[in-house]
Image (spheres, rainbow over the protein chains, first blue to last red):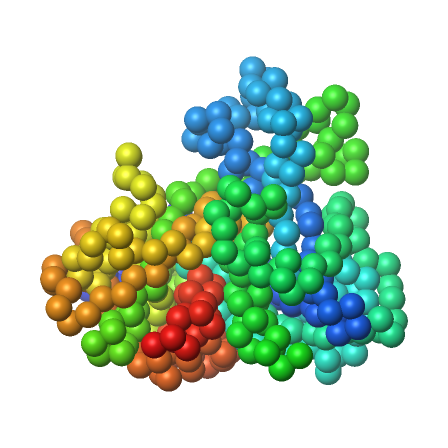
Length: 210
Length: 210
């Protein structure tokens, strides 16, 4: 919770003090990757604890952490069996800016190798835009990039680091387009806002030139 | 903090328990509004405490709430004087789903009246897509809509409710396009991801037909 400052006897909003919940999280990068040889866009499927939590809270009609209580464990197990995609998302390659001294572009390049397994040259990672990834409860920045690879691009390991479990998903342009417009609940996997912006940017600016 | 469940002696990720910070926040709606008469897109400028907090934490090189301590108040005041847009964003019309029994489409219609002051018909509020507005720390859903108005559309009050302080900003299509591609730090006002997705959707799908 933050309490906004009263300065010069005036608060920031309408002369009243303002009390607000906010969290501080890392800034981040995201990068949409297109393989010119296979004509496919590369995404990652991964487990997102917060999305899982959000599903469960809704489905058991509770607003609190009772969703994880022992009494509710059979409910959780049933839902996991019914929906093996529960809490999984499809996203563009992304990562947080937690490495001292590295530029967002450098981190984006590293994430391409860590998550989807291609060793790209730094200058092929092109800046698109930067924006606030959350405005209601966090004010963190995200830097969005675009990178084209080919089947000749050197390969690395991919799949994430340490406790990440990341699966690469390759989709044709037409398949990817179907992810733009649907109800999240109808999509096989949840999609974050930045992926939809990046995809829409690709269809609007890049794919007409391909 | 959530601790993910171990089910059938297996945890969800690589056989290890997973501990994660997550917050539960409301689902939300956002709606991009275009005035066919004036050929302008309608945005809202508003103060976002979390964005303000994020700016200050960065600029005073601290990770905690010391940014709001008495010792630091002169720093905060100086920054406010230097940058009157600190913590302000430019966004599309949006709101949280906290009204029992109302559909996302109905809430979007109400937000158009509350925030930008037009009383539109429900069937003019068209669904574009829904997605997860946060995947790292919250799994909340956002429903995105599009609505066209004209100078004949009946007017209401606008400007937000209670402790909101919302200013409507009307931009030509060309002016709005400049908001798509820039560094957040170079933009006069911070832009959230959903606004960029909605804008890009408008340029890609709608403006070619206008």
